[in-house]
Length: 281
Image (cartoon, rainbow, N blue to C red):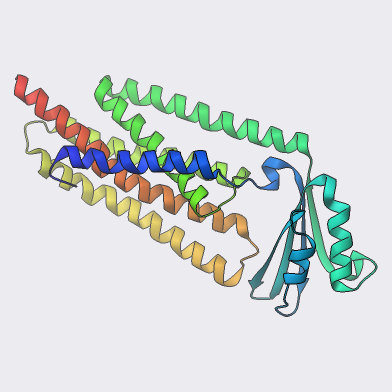
């Protein structure tokens, strides 16, 4: 926590603005869960050069190779209207006349279903946020205290999306679920801080915040550690399970953002509010 509340508030606000700019200009990549399309996964026994396949599918499909404990997986993601072209290029690359001769699997999500995923996911986040805001206001009955918790939660969400844009993490049904979890984590730490501060107005503000930080940071860092272990295990042993690594990464980014927004933004605004409150009494 920074002693000067103006600096404490300015740091997360700058990061929030940068996140908004990043999302606006770079965008967030979307998975086939959101855009619709087909994902073809081909298992191979050794690491092979997929550059020719990438070149042949340039501007047609996304191609990558993932290493796992039991081999290598070539992943091709393509829109529905170009699936047949992609399959022909894959057959040419492997010199086969049928994909059935390869150890492959295929997943297709239709455009209507994918748009429904996105619509329902967006509604879930929106309603979760609205009900969270109502619950917080009912609990505190204080516009400043409630407003700063809501602002911190919103900042966590936007910064997490900014991190997804920066690191090219796809927006999917799984990462939308992770973003819903972000709201819960954010509210936990912010309610802890706000409750401690408002119930101990007679004590020194910085001491109250430091006491709250011991509990809050312990919770947050424990979760970050767990997600980091999950991310490392997935990356090393089952990289084909991209959904798990995406969820873990989004939560790590969001929890780092939560540390900044809770202990800088929320604490800074509360310090200003408490200073003004005590000055009038």
